[in-house]
Image 1 (spheres, helix red, strand yellow):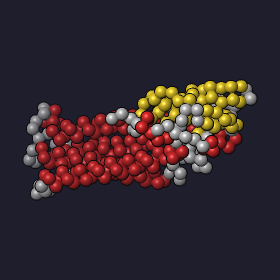
Image 2: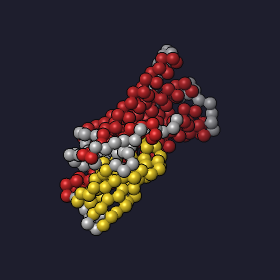
Image 3: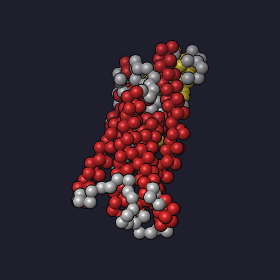
Image 4: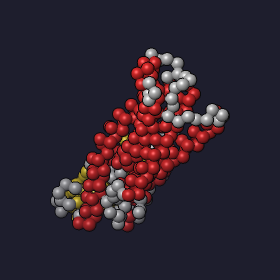
Amino acid sequence: MKDWWDDRPVFSTTDKGARITGLAPGESPGHVTGRLAILAALCFAGWVAASLLGTSWLCNASSAPGETCAVDLPGGVRLLWRILATVAAAYFLLHFSLSFGEQARQRLGQSRAAGLLVGSALLAGIAAGAGFSVVTGFSVDPSETLRRTLDFRVGTEAYAISAAIALVAVLWWIFVLGRLPAALVAARERQATIERLRRDGRRYAGTVTLGRIVFWLGQSPELEVTIAYDSPAGAHEIAARMRTSPDRVPANGSKVVVLDDLRGDLHIELDRDGGPSFEPAERYRASE
């Protein structure tokens, strides 16, 4: 599947920031495929394991004798090896989560929808792992363990921290999950509109006038632009947003193609056949 970001810049007259949606030429609107579902399950399982081991490590290090931890870690393992194992596992999980996010962004055509999909799996895993640690710790004598934890007794720090992590992760997960379905629907509908306009829309030649940089998403600038074009109804000037990378900012006055269905839907693309030129990349790099 072609990556829509390869055809940047991406324009939008309705959306801003991570909501701006793209669709590579010749591609169909994306959706949550079986591959993405499997990656989400693996992301969830990985963060369950990381959260469970992390909170169990904390419990083993701070609990009083006789208290229960979700996972009993070998006492003979040196602290240095535990730290190295934790760093390696965290690096792998972060790399996997970022890769999952890239594949979701490519398939769904929108950074926001992809971020919410990854975030829902990640937060659910953290909440499940930390929550299991809390349940395990309270399994022997729930009332006494709760009393000692609320009294901030030495040896109960792990339970309090694990409960706090689980609570924050659950609340955040509920917030993310509540927004995910609408984001997925909006991204797919916008991609379907782009596909329809490319197939059935009226094409007009236009030009782009660059405005100010609104912000950077990572190292990619988003600019306010003005699109001017003529149609049988007369001359038009419309405000739009443009997301791109520093090396793909079209020169002021570059040619664009405007696709219109006469019902209010617009799609704008850089005119690839017009031999576009680009501004120097140094001019649009984010300041460090």
